Image 1 (cartoon, rainbow, N blue to C red):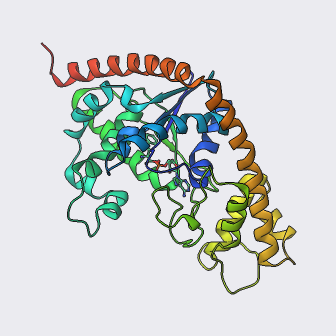
Image 2 (spheres, rainbow, N blue to C red):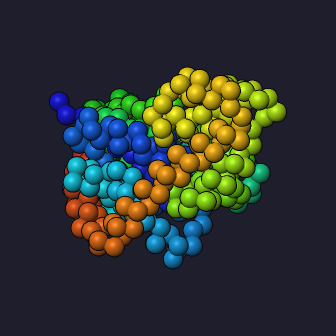
Image 3 (cartoon, rainbow, N blue to C red):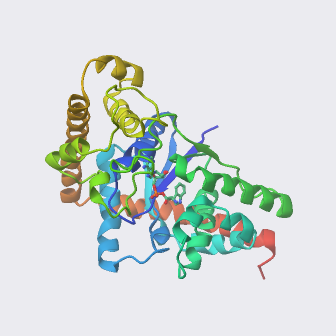
Length: 328
Ligand code: TYM
């Protein structure tokens, strides 16, 4: 039986190397093995915090171009924009009514983002339910995400199981798919926290749009430790471990191979290597990105994606309405 995989990215900032390694690359790997694959721009999710409308509008399309430039095949993958599907928020409301406040408020991301703030949106709390809807409306089997999103996929499973118990079989229970390595790319300046699009200090974050010199400079400036050995140890050497993770995913070499190769080299030499391979990869991607933007293909891709996913979501919405009794 064919299995469906699905993932989404939120346009709250420019796509980062963390997104590329944690979500886009695993997705591309899976694209080869599965014949039913969905990838979308989670623009409704971005609205949980204020976004400049002009910037958001522009960024949504640029996200799609970047997916394709990274290797997502638009002939094989259904690519769409979340907000073009009006059935998703409609289903989400019904799922919100089947989610406990306690569950939602226990989400780590909610706790982190609301901490110390007096005024944050209700959407920040209900956001994982919208994410559950993204996954459940189309009966996705696997959801490739970085470690930080795993808890939300687990909540999705709980919501779906509860709904199925209460109203009868409606939703498929999804499985989070997390690759072993590279799923937690850390901030270069503070390697105890994740590399994030919304980070204010740009020196810790590699954007997918950074040019070669900037990338090399940022990696040169990455925080490391006072020890001299290039060894993987996330607790004691988070900075070096992060660079090993990045280098391993980009170069295709294992961490052990890299440790051996750099056994008698210093941090400067190692950083030059990581900077070089990363910058070369992003340079290739950026070339493709520019071609795609120039080709005018994006609207065709997105119209096709919207049509297909609206049909699926409409059917699921109808089923859910029947189950809960909100029909004439
Ligand atoms: P978002 O936009 O924060 O991140 C997109 C994807 O990138 C992964 N990621 C990382 N992986 C490794 N290292 C990092 N530093 C790093 N930063 C981000 C995230 O884990 C994620 O997989 N709520 C989601 C978007 C979403 C979604 C969905 C995902 C909405 N609906 C349904 C899957 C299925 C989000 O904010 O991801």
